[in-house]
Image (cartoon, rainbow, N blue to C red; front, top):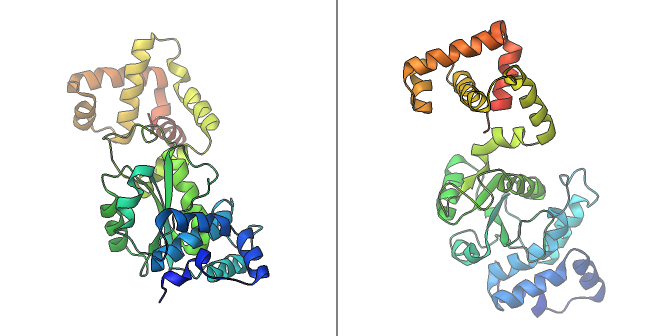
Length: 288
């Protein structure tokens, strides 16, 4: 096991080893050790390793296809005296919430001190170590730990592929209704619950074009009518035409739903029965 001597600012290293370590972010690790205090065993080593892995996190590809070879990252972790866990989970959260969360996660969890590509302002990054093989139970525990801390939790991935977890968390943080304005202040967002939104947000221009194509038949109507018929069409698609469910979602009477659907059938005709149109309309209108 590790002790306080494993922090890289407290142990003298051969010049070549120090040079190699700095290439992987060793200076960031030293800053991290100074910030959190000297001689804190596993936590200090993890902070050192965070700097060593900064370059890996910044890469846009998995370790197998990026410019930075996996064995080089492994070597950097070894020089930082950091024992890699089976998996890591990227977690974005307000900087003020880092310390409360760190006290409840595996001590090998990393807290990179360097600015990472795409990181939102005022948001810190934790790469939470998975102490055992990832499971539904372990993810539930992590979500419970970060609950009420305003976190965005990426997928749990093998530690060398943590760039993928970080990138997904960043994309989720940028989704409407997540960045800066969660439904309830302090809400934690699990990216696994936002996969559909992430897919639909992958090409905003294409989604906008698809939405315009789907709603084109309504173009001649008044804006107020277009808004009501659009929300009714969306609800009809998502509830598979169940009138009671549509009425409940829209807070209208069932007869109102019937009237609006008659208008939509007059405008769209047989397209409402066309599987291709149903697919396109569902995708275009799924996310408000």
